[in-house]
Length: 371
Image (tube, rainbow, N blue to C red):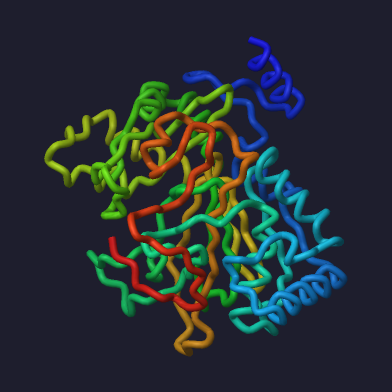
């Protein structure tokens, strides 16, 4: 009882209510697009002094010849910038769940320097985890597909196609813009807390459906001894905290397995309502060169608009991606353990782990991912 009381005291101090299923959730991460547009507290910009500090840290790492995946906080000192990065982390974990940092000087960095700078900043948010079965700790959002074709099996982040709202398999996702698109490629984010609250208000029966477990397709990224699918609710309530795990594609894709039950009409309606509300409540931001967007996956869903790329290879839209785990993350449901191999109660989501995988930080889009 004492432990629960202590946690509730903390929740109240943060102006966050105790989240309960089928009750409205009070949380700083509950917002609609217009509110976020008028709130400057999640936007940050590097000062000239902070950029100089970043330059020095990058040069120090490269001089020592460190591999990116081996860089630690001690290897990458940022004494002035540290204060701003702590504010960003607080905004992610205790505030809106979204933060934008502008002004990383990628226009004068080579790809290695950009990756080193990004890694050093990312260390302040959490520990990098694998993004795919190749063990990539550093991901590349880049069109490798050529002309987009209906029915293409390429991963969406390796095409220029529209990407529907989803959350990733980590606590925090980061995107650093090396080159923006010629047109489009706008980042779209929505509060999953607000989506839940609005669904509860309009259609409580559909909200109830999303609190039940849903089968998810692992899309061939199967840990040893596991089925090619797993079960996890979309809306979760754990130790007084709300969290959301949303990927419409992987939920619908699980229907390819004959062993699993077919969707009911109520389930179809709930999936459709989730996307409808995300679009209604969204906030859109166009990436500029040198932007880093950080998102708290358990309270924010994100997507991307279709884009037109530049014809020149060196100008093509290119983002670097980090998936990060942080010990300060909110409690997650026990069902999360089924998603991640080797994860123990209380540990953080560990990204994609498969047998024989080696961790790496490629400096180019090394593999064309397929689903």
